[in-house]
Image (cartoon, rainbow over all chains, first blue to last red; front, side, top):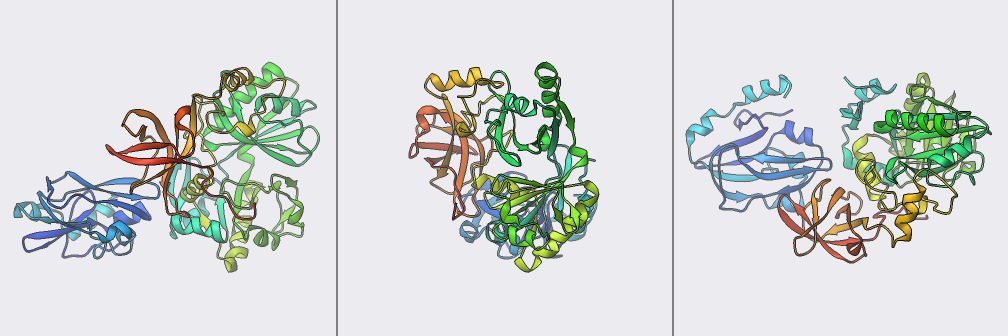
Length: 128
Length: 371
């Protein structure tokens, strides 16, 4: 499973790519592999304020429904509309074209407190 | 740790993702994924380990009468080596299980039941035997039987390459005992399945399972066969509207409510549950009915989600639902009051608090061509 070193992670298997004042969010390679074929992604409204740990979206595979949790507090400034017609991007390119939302960073401390790639990798090896 | 079939190690070697299913460790999918496995069965062929299914062997002179008392369908008209599908009911008309009845040589009937219901079914059959037909011998032979399902339009060609027996002689819902598959004697081979495609269910002794499994996958390779897990089994049976016990069938619904009237022979003199079923049918038919529906907007109706009237009044519940891999539509099955059961009726499904409009559509959702 890929775990890019420039990203931050949550224990719930989301990633955050901080870039300036905001960051894109998606689910990890491990998460998409566990879910299997993604067939539907429910996206939040742009402009919605989310709290860290709040479920803001849903990823559905053939067999299961999984909430996606906000890794940080902030406002949703963009959503990946491509997932409406091609949800399989979450499987094919979880850290790239399979991003789900972009969140405006409200508290940089929250970002710093997220897991780094090494810690997230250790979490997976520890038995998810 | 759950129970393991004789093919457990094969699943691990093939990269199967193991999950608990009714106390069994079974593969939900292999690395190809559920959608690819589903497509393989619709277009080519797929091989499923269904060794977790339960088998109950019945012997005795009055074995056919006993089977006929247990199930709602008509066993008496079965010819030797013919198979039938039937619900099996409690006295009140609720469903114990749905199963296959194999009429084998004279005095021998085999019941094949759902894995998660095997213990309950064995107890039920034993109890009825004791009460009604103590002269019939009943034995749970599940542990002595491995089973695999080879399904898909290429199933016959693949299996034919492994046997000298002419498979054209096994018609739909017929069985052939004791034919050799890949050099091993199969207990029974029937043209049955749970996918909506042509195919075979192959019963072998546990010690032969690995060899036969590997040989089928090897023979199927040029055809693009895939080993398939429970995920594809569920999506395939769902499109074909084959009911799943615990979802479309349970002890709280009669088979008439679950849309299985064709398999309930109310003209029979007696079977367990006949009274209440007859009464339900004669008093205008079931008040609650299983329907198929299609969502009009994006979303997936999952098992347990509420079904509402267009005005938002809760009227029923989704039993199964998914984005149909073959049709690409968000469809589902669920129970609604009879007045909402007509094709074309507008309903809605509450998906995480949001009402998604839906319309009752015809079942099955998928029917293979040429049938």
